[in-house]
Length: 313
Image (cartoon, rainbow, N blue to C red; front, side):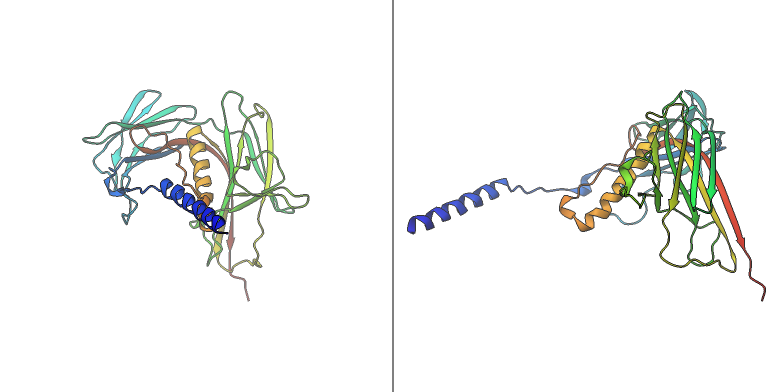
């Protein structure tokens, strides 16, 4: 009996030594990290203005907005030809009047006094080919059709926005449809929140992403529904309801950034329930000498507006 007790004691002592040997204290000085310039600009084919925002990163303990940079020299290039300098407006925003052309390559350079050059570039996707959006009111679904372009790699994102149902609806306060339902096998499964079932279609968060692998040059059709609300909907007496359904063709930078942002958002949601398995992910950036995003897209959309007037007594 005495030998057994001694044996158990030795085993416990060994485990304690092993655990203590693996323990390592880490001293992190988060205040010691220097701020990094942040450059963000999203170009849309057909727009007549290019907007660039220049800010700085900040410490995780700092409160308030990100520090803005008002003394930068911001230049725009198209296919390596100098277009002009952007003019500073406010809150870190710089703008230049220029018509954004599809299939052109744009580079934005930001020169901050005392810092290395910060830059990023993007190739604007071609307009969507033979695109159409139809609303099937009987089955409450949105039918999207377009033809893939063989000459380039394409990343398609589909969704819709609608007026908020809180208070009187208007065309200014809109939000992205949170859940999209479809039986199609085309969408990427990365943001699928509910899998296929015999009777219930798959459900996706915010967008349907379709990469053109295996679809080169083909006609594409994809329909979806929004999730039904759990409350009874009635038409208000006043206000204006707006719904915009769209198909986006993103460049590779915008595609990688948006996908990483949604994945990150899912991780943040999971952190509350399973913190032991949570690990932060880096959000995609294509900025040299800093962080942020210079990206572009082309867009096809269908807009529906309904005006409500008070019923006569």
